[in-house]
Image (tube, rainbow, N blue to C red):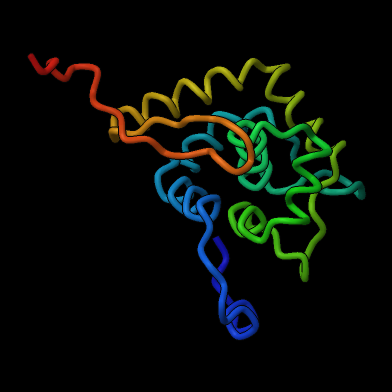
Length: 159
């Protein structure tokens, strides 16, 4: 995540940390981003020639998870990224430096995961990782994705 600037704080004196922002902060901390990117990297396009270079892999993966956690389509996540400071911060997008990836770029990334059957593997890794750390993700609408503490499956039932 990018560091906060003076402008971020100076002009938002009465800002409140939202549930969405707190959820994304927690996910930024607990998700094994490097390991997840390593699963995709062999299939991800490499910058070649004079064409437009591909977007950063981790940024695209984070966008993909935003879609999953908040039940957003390709065009909806593009709009949400322009609209939500918390989502831009989570993905590392600074509108002063770069535009949000368009819905076609987002769609192509999703299709890359589908073509190589990576989506299921990524979510399995995440589920295992979160379970090992006593967490569970509950999906929902853009306002209610939450992290839920979940007891270990090896925990003994209380009589």
